[in-house]
Length: 111
Length: 115
Image (cartoon, rainbow over all chains, first blue to last red; front, side):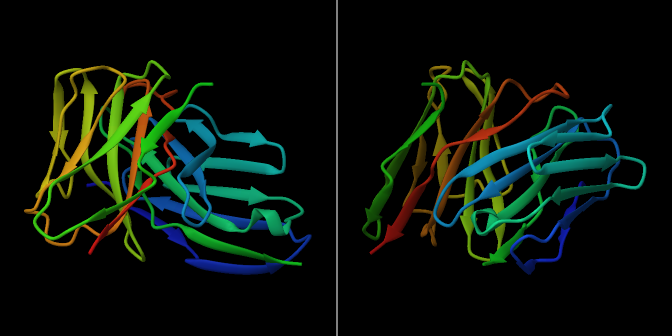
């Protein structure tokens, strides 16, 4: 059974720092991996989707990488801002099954 | 304006009542999902549907029921059999489950509180 782990559970950084969020999964036979952002009391917003054949995806200050063989993905946030404060969730899809989610990393960017 | 809508935003239920949460999407997606989110527990899958008139149980289906009579609608009923229904409920949709480019999108959520 696929399991997804995100470390750390919480992270606090000063504004302007570059940071990396980690996601690991136990079964490397995945179709894709998706990163989401969730603000308190809100739904999830899709940030990036990496297909199994891809190594990375970029959107603005965000860059997500995927290493299927080692079961790892990272989300890199450049020049962090207070508006980046949120919970970031990683999820993987394996075949014709629903996404399996990690528990998220709660990020605080301090001005 | 395409997207997923959930209503109501807040819902209060008395003990022993059934309540129905609405989820509608105009993205022409085949697959729809219901999740429950509790503090510190992450997202847990309740039910999902990959096609009209068909649905499957997720990890925590007991005390819940769904229907999928139309492609754009996937209502969730929280029955009196659900002993601890107070939570944040999220609906999602995707093109279908079996493609690598399948991106999943979420609605804004419904917060259910038992009085």
